[in-house]
Image (tube, rainbow, N blue to C red; front, side, top):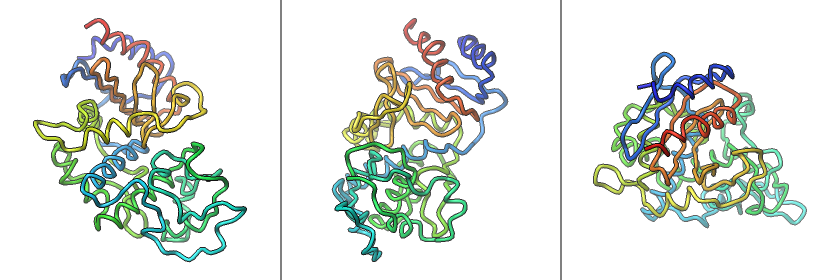
Length: 305
């Protein structure tokens, strides 16, 4: 089924873009796919964030949490000296601030390298020990630490890890079983990264998003939550497809599309106007190059139909 993808394969080969797998769907049907070797479960890096976002929507529906909930509602660490220069304490950060990555840190906590070397095992305690650099809610700064704190809040609110909470509500209905998702030293689902699934399994998630949470006759995630999460909630200042704005743990894209994305070219692109889902797994730093190949070589496949 890779004949339609000859242009895309030629482009990534010519530009030496290390793509492993692509699947393109329209109206729920597989139009084409290509695997360099075989599709297998790989770590999804920050695509994990968009799954965590689904847990938020479900917990909101169940009345277990609300968007104005603050870190201080769930964590009582005594960091009296943290608030400074008339700025709020991290305890005042709202779930909505964390969802759109506007927590107010100039240097976001809990990047991968920091997580690997941190001696403090309670990452929530560490996060909340760091002062804010500006008023939250106003400026976007990409932060895996913000998403980890969403996961920690959800665990406190639901009594389950995000992975365990999502298993009967999302993973099982999608037929994604025996999921691996990395955790903090204290067993909190990483949330921001560390989810292992295949590209085919990712395409089921993409189709669920396109269908606004509806799956095989059942509304498994509230439609209004998916619409909210995948609409621009804050402006971004990046180049190319990183400058189109950010929702709740989703990026806005060219062509009125949106995406979940992870480092090194994990991509789940939804184009509602084409009823299209495009999922890609890679190990490649030039993610804009991959997206350009999608816009130039894959998108026309939909307009011809």
